[in-house]
Length: 153
Length: 153
DNA sequence: ACTTTTTCAGAAAAATTTACAGATATGAAG
DNA sequence: CTTCATATCTGTAAATTTTTCTGAAAAAGT
Image 1 (cartoon, rainbow over the protein chains, first blue to last red):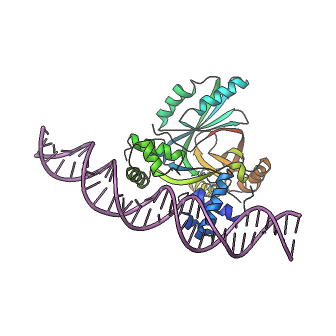
Image 2 (cartoon, chains in turn blue, cyan, red, orange; image 1 turned 90 degrees about the vertical axis):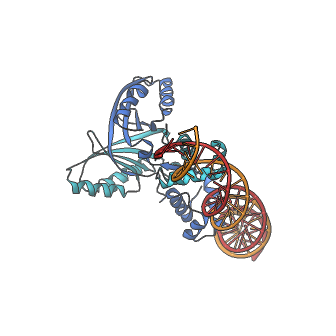
Image 3 (cartoon, rainbow over the protein chains, first blue to last red; image 1 turned 60 degrees about the vertical axis):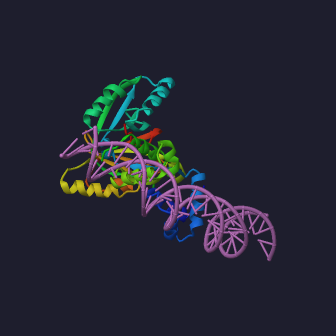
């Protein structure tokens, strides 16, 4: 799908606040309400907009502690990889999992209540998984920037 | 603010799809439409829900290439830190920035079109910033899991 | 220049959100 | 255990928004 300037502006606005009404959007874009409506529908149908979500403040739900956990597998058979990925994706503390290049095989973004909860997570959840070789944890001292909005330039 | 079981269920539903109507939510929760409405308002006012956003598929806007970039500063004066954080937060390719423990000072999540665009970003944007000592890049081979939803257990 | 297709605007209908009034539950204090 | 105060709930009605519909304007292709 080809995006014109209005589509991109619309995506920028909706990535920042998806609760804006079509009327508000129509004012900012200089289009009618219906034109905005149709464009949004098209972006949704084309899969450009994948979903709409509410974002929750981590400290309000006891998830203010963030760590990045790098993992090496013992052996990279197809079965091992598939099984590990499926298991780790099932852990609610793990928000993001990436198979990566470099010394380690995976990077995980983990959010829990505090360091004690992280220790518990490592001991009882993560290292309980199969095929894990070694791990290395990096702790977030302070989040500087955290956005879900992709630039559309 | 104290969250009861219904609040937590509501947060789970809205973190998965914020476009659900209050009527749909009221069915799932076994509450009236107004009760759902009031609970959501309260969660918003208390700051538990920070914002509502549209999520965009990276490959649809030429941002399918993800890298983690670790950075060391040359010297950690307060001025340097503040200036670097402000500058790096201003880069649209950089979705997340964390001040972290360990060998490196910062971890960045960077999303661009491809490796060529990443090279361009590193040479012309990132290393153009002040106070950067060394960097190390880790490339995402495949994203395994990526959610914005925090567990409310 | 003509046709086809896409995009747009405005009005009307449908659905949803929001405000309101009163009932029910919950918790603290006597 | 009762009473008061506070919270939360339900159902209705009003306000707002979304969605549909019709036709005009613009854009693209032949």
